[in-house]
Amino acid sequence: MELGTGLTQFLIEQQRKYPSATGDFTSLLSEIATAAKVLSREVNKAGLIDILGFHGKLNVHGEAVQKLDQFANDTFIKVLRHTGHLIGIASEEMEEPYQIPDAYPKGKYVFLMDPLDGSSNIDVNISIGSIFAIYRRKSVGAHATTEDFLQKGRDQVCAGYIIYGSSTMMVYTTGFGVHGFTLDPGIGEFLLSHENIRIPSRGSIYSINEGNEFIWGNGVGQYIKQVKKEGKTARYVGSLVADFHRNLLKGGIFLYPADAKNKNGKLRLLYEASPLAFIVEQAQGKGSDGRQMILDIAPDKLHQRVPLIIGSKEDVEEANGYLSS
Image 1: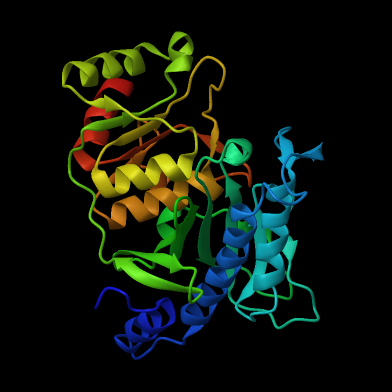
Image 2: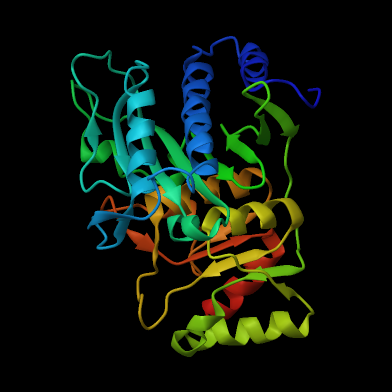
């Protein structure tokens, strides 16, 4: 499709390729884009209004909630709850899922999100983002159940992220390739800028917090020594969406392995690892926890943490060899 095509037109054209399509995703993704526009506006003026800084409470993980974290969480809920496509919403910022109120029509999907990834970087103007995943509900009835959210990553019907940087960009997949749209603030529309994204099979970049070197396992340390010998360049922002986005486009590997401090890993399976793994596999890359593919992990709790090794296929396979030995 021609670059510069609007997101809504692109979605409609994609829908026409599948006669049995109901149009649910055309509507739902359009509403996600609406939430992204609202957040992009607020992120870009965050230094001018009283929206930066600590919210005054901790989230379910014991982390300080930033004001913009809460705003992002509330924005997605307010924009998506009335669509008629969802039965429930789970968020990294909420201990329990949000049930779609009876005042709104109920749908057949659940929505999971990290509403604002990298929020610790807000105050220093580093790129941040939102990550989301959509699954078909498994239950029946008027309310979502925990079972609806605890699904393997391979069961996702859609995953994506929005990155708020020098430009705002939305990247998504419904299992038929990965497509990127850049927001034109002049017309308020996401325009096709990256069609059918393919990550290089091997990259020249590695992304890891080397400040944790002394608590890594031996396999991680050996792998990092090897990639340095190979001439890979270190690039680490500390914002998962930003690091992942760069590597997706340029090739490379991102690692947040288990270590002595985070024995089960640090990143959230449902809100971060699974959506990004679905995207990277659709772009011909790989995502693992160092031993098995992220998309094959059966979650047993909403806020489950995992190690994450993700990026170019050959790089991830090489890293897995070190981490699993």
